[in-house]
Image (cartoon, rainbow, N blue to C red; front, side, top):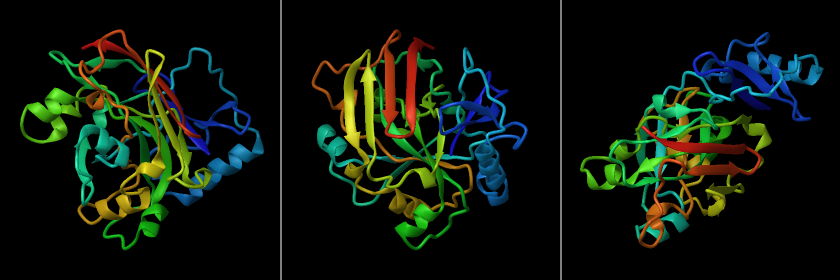
Amino acid sequence: MKLLRVGTAGTERPALLDSEGVLRDLSGVVPDVDGSLLADDAALGRVRAAAESGELPALDATGLRIGPPLARIGKIVCIGLNYHDHARETGAEPPAEPVIFFKAADTVVGPYDTVLVPRRSAKTDWEVELAVVIGRTARYLESARDGLAHVAGYAVAHDVSEREFQIERGGTWDKGKNCETFNPLGPWLVTADEVADPQDLSLRLWVNGELKQDGTTAEQIFPVGEVVRYVSQFMTLYPGDVINTGTPAGVALGAPEPKPFLRAGDVVELEIEGLGRQRQEFKDA
């Protein structure tokens, strides 16, 4: 299923994109798309049955905002330097274990919402990423296979980053990762049964129409199942938590000087095979 949330920010309602591409209203079946829904097999069964019945009301998508596909996110765990090609382009040694940092849930915006370039920013960068949405409580998992079994679905994430804040201002990466609007998510949450192999997805990103990133999840150093297993050794993952699994080569940080960091007026578009497409215009904060 392709689950999403539509409406003005803060008042989104649940929806579903059916097999024919028609937007359907789910608000009469479930109150929202969140961790509670993803952990409830009976509720998901009702959603599937309603979708298959063909009786869900159609929504007019004209002018209708698409919000983040997941409400009440608990935490966003991010994996750094998780693509062989990205490590090569930045001159970094591939990590022996996954690099973990966090984004606050309040960085999440819709896939077509405006992204704000922070005040005094000189190095705002782009990163297309596969987001993993947890559907079952995960703690001390024993295998990558167990990790995949705890995934409810997948989405497109844009891990917007300010590299000066991240790398040159001391401390951890978090200062360059948690600026306002720095995690567009969506348009859809695609349930795991529709993704045959999360290690065989193409990822692409364009800036002002120019292709910058053209990669594949096959380049991940630590694949999805292993990432979930690994993270569960250090923290409990709950339904509705999100893991951003890293970005392939092609970011501004890895480009020759002068590096083409983002400015107000730039337009970024990104997509992952089968998971939908985003578009954001950047403006000054």
